[in-house]
Amino acid sequence: MNYEETGKILAVIKKNYPHAYKDFTTEEKADLITLWQEMFAEDDYGVVGAAVKSYIATDTKGFAPIIGQIKELIRKLTEPKEMTEQEAWGYVAKALRNSGYHSAEEFEKLPEQIQRVVGSPAQLREWAMMDSDTVQSVVASNFQRSYRARAKSDKEYQALPSNVKAMLEGVSNKFLLE
Image (cartoon, rainbow, N blue to C red; front, side):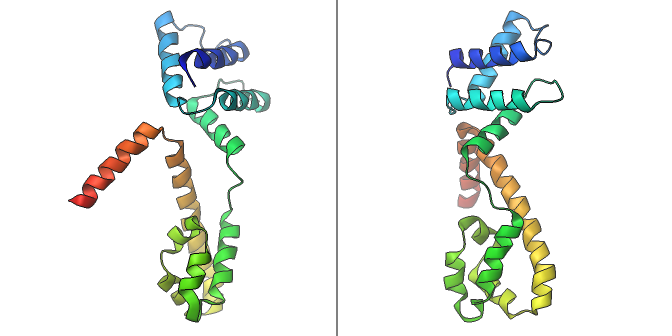
């Protein structure tokens, strides 16, 4: 989204929430447009507009949206429905049925996000060898908590602008090399 389009988006917000920016100076308004333009530089103007309109249509509190709220709505509008922790556990529970001897094959069948939480085929094998009551209570609970935390972390990372992601990847690669 470019600077002009960002100004149009903020004008829509200002029309619906006139009190939000009433005391802004011309310089503060320009700074606000610049900030929003930087944060939505990679987003399509139409998608951002749809997210803003969605926010306005469902707002019952009367406060102008902040960048994070619009980013979250964009994710909801553009990404496929995310798997719940119960659905993710269902994949693991199914994989466990055959993981005593075929944990590597079962691990490879799991979606990538679930693989990252499980960790390895050896973990699947270990769970498959445990008492089923323990697996269905303790292991299931711990997996679901870990899955929920991983999903939240992934969503937060995806919301970052690409220049921030690149900087973080550069920092993490630097530590890997040391």
